[in-house]
Image (cartoon, rainbow, N blue to C red; front, top):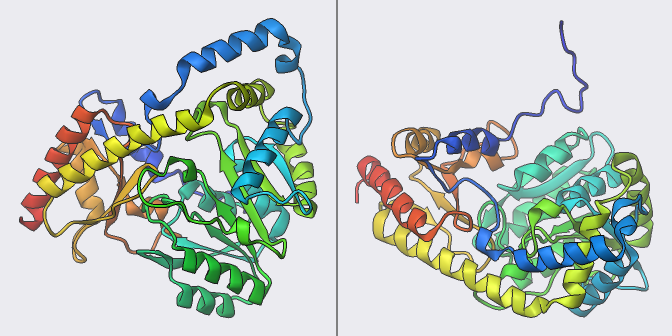
Length: 398
């Protein structure tokens, strides 16, 4: 049987992250390849209590069909919370609950972009969103990152070269995969360019609540006076990723189209999980919870950074994130990065994600790889960095 797939999916490839994760089934492998929150950051006891209350007090609410827009009490509490953060304007914006931030990003592209339209994104960027965009046969163009975010001059040059640019996709806080944060000045400049060239911005902020160093920076959404910023958030990093509850704040006209598209996708987000999220926000001390999990991530990140400095070859460069889950390491220009990553997992039993998993095009060259510090234990961080360090020093010298 010959399988002729649609043009929308025939060019999509399995995520390199998933391929690397196959090696982690070996109990001897230390995985720095995941993108999962720290297990010790999950509020398990609160989830148990709230789940019991839901199923005892109003089980049908959690088990019956619900509305596409999302559970009204959750939407209301999120609107108030986001309004205080500057991420929701009740006069012009609406909010929908989605199945994770990934769905927000996919639906934004679906309602705004035709085949052949251009989406500009950071290079490198999150593979989940890149594949979602590619599935709509858009022209995906990457703009390189600098230490303080996207290269503004090259961004404007790229916009000028692509007259049908519809959307700029950004992860301003502790970007995946690099861990970098966009400066306030660059956020302002990106918004100015979006206004100048009449382009939408998709601001993806899954990690913003887990800042453990530095100062908070104003969101691009808070600057939106023209109705051109779609803001994507999630409970995955602050509550639990398995509940698949995200949310999207955008101009009312955009949300109305997203609602229709979501109806044909999954009808509505898991209602039990939505009630759980609302009760967590309403009955638990969310700010204390955030303080507690930030301590977890701060410790893990600082431990990994110190072990990298202690063990890695001096020729390996790396980012120092102020939040999020990831550190981006860059090998010397002339090295075989993929060979390095394969040796790391096959010979040294440490799994990392090769940078090619996050490039816009398969042919884009990179000598970088991503490390995750949130999932491994302290002992695994120390041992894994020691092993990768041994490999790096053997290949590149001290």
